[in-house]
Length: 465
Image 1 (tube, rainbow, N blue to C red):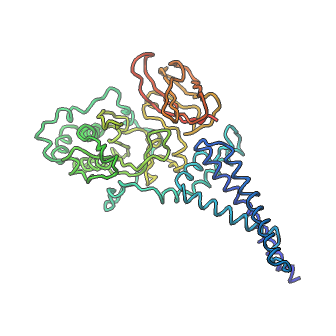
Image 2 (cartoon, helix red, strand yellow):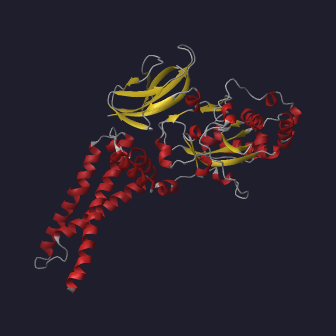
Image 3 (cartoon, rainbow, N blue to C red):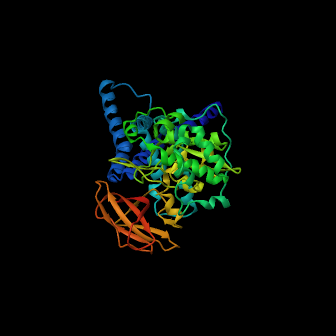
């Protein structure tokens, strides 16, 4: 009887260890196959890694070890059985493989698992499929710490740590004041456009001038936003060098030059000077469909009449390209709905998403990269709903277009070659023929007329297999 009592837990332990050991190749294959799907590498790499991890390398290793043992100790009987030795070798090999892969490409591993970890379920639907998909992505979330460990945001140091930040009022539906967005037909606030030169002697003087002449709290904050957008130029040289001069509000006010932290700090300081609660928010942002990881960024949140609204003065000031910074006034990121802002901005503190159910980082990364203008024009993306999609010959985009905007599509290959996908149309679905295997970014442009200037509203990434 005692021997049975002892053997039973040992048997359970053996079963548990065996299951654990033979799950490690599955984890390794999942990681490799997700990286393959994410980078659009050949599928045979996944198959080869699976065969090598189990059983080819462990079995070859065990056969070689057994032969060596018999030659060196012909009379001795091994303590462990053949299956036990194979199990341990499988465990050691696969754990070493997973650890090395995570150590060499920690961020790519998280991105791959968070965005393409369900590649084997693509095109499949049903309650069981969705439950499995959620389980895979929840498992991927456990690697976020590794992703963050290798990610540095140089603008965190400007975050206010002395003042206690208020908790945002989460709102699922925009209130009546939110209807000002997207500020159609609005230009730079007249107080900013016509501000006398002597007023700009100090930050406080500018704030007082605006506060005394603009009674509407929304337009007052807009005027502060417009001042920062209009007076500050983006410091493209420092951004490219990765070496940033001081970004405090006073320095930016005097030099009229800054990166995102300086824009946000100046707007927060102007808000404080006029008695408006405008805070500095730090996190990550992404602007291109092909760059899911994005980069460190800073922006603002403003409390107006009890509700919180999001602002990104940097992205409303213009854009940078190979030639430098080009100033271009915009209001796309002035009080956009939280659902729109959360496509491109991911704050370190999820409270500042202003969503009833904040997104996880994986959910943020899985969203297609659409601009605020896409939503401002009444468009809705029906499919695909992911940041990256595998397709055959055709990349198909389905939209709802109730205002009958004219839509132009353009595909850009990995080598930078671009071509128009189809005729300009008001109808969907839109089909884009991808000429060869590779990754393509399909860009969307819209206009209210068939001919003329089309505006960029977003892009989706497709992998042609």
